[in-house]
Length: 417
Image (tube, rainbow, N blue to C red; front, side, top):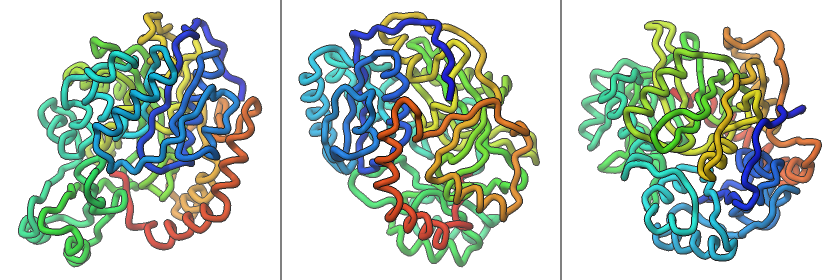
């Protein structure tokens, strides 16, 4: 695609480091971050699972650090690993976490990491709290932000009580964004049809279920909205973008497959006020659902880091949230400009099955433009082809099998709200 011309200059003496914890090599968001700053001449480094990930193949990657992790390591070991990487880079470096584990690790070890790296500082415990489904729900109640009704069972007896009065269907999600010592109770977002289904699932959750049971917002009466933004040390928005999620995979439950930039001043203002109240600084990726039944936007998820689809959003000055963070942390102004309404973002390897599934269901999103003003692909870029072909090589055979298993075994049971 034709990228917007930039109206700013970056500090090319300050590199960026993409930080990921866990094994997910096909991550288009990491490739997007490498390209975003790399195209401006910023030296980009990345932590990769091995030498042959799409991120490792990017022409804009200055250096890679092969460091396979699981997310179950002791935090002290992960911090030591980051410090070793920082010493090898040899100069102050902007950290760009791509998952909750990395974002929380950086926030909770800011005193140790701050001498070598640049990153936004958040109040102690806040990143972990917003990444937690229970913590976020409590913050929403505290600050008057609409969110789906939810309960947090502590025992199997609590689940049995809930089964007796709940209005089904309901949604089950893992209470915490990640568990270092145990397997998650559910795989993603799971729609539960009735009390019998709940009791069957609960048998595997153990004596202390780590789940949230949440009100189901029917897709026929809802729209999925996303907000990506960057907030400075005073929790003021230096860049803010709103858009509509059109398709995800698995359908209505998983990763964004196709989305459009659509202006929504009301939602932007709600987000800005909420972030200001809780005092968060840094990049955010928020999932909201508009419930047509009561005409309210309800906050579903708060990711205290860049979202995989962040390249959907770039303003007319050429600023996205990753560029905004680098500019701000290096002491440069972040230029204001309008977002590119009508721009579309497509994740090639998952959008085709998602499109087929949504076409069969007849689901539509009213706010989507008739035709996109422009389109950006997650993987394919004319100036950086190797990540696309590396993705294909790793995805085609096991990826096709995985998509089929997800569709056969999970479609219809998952929902992201």
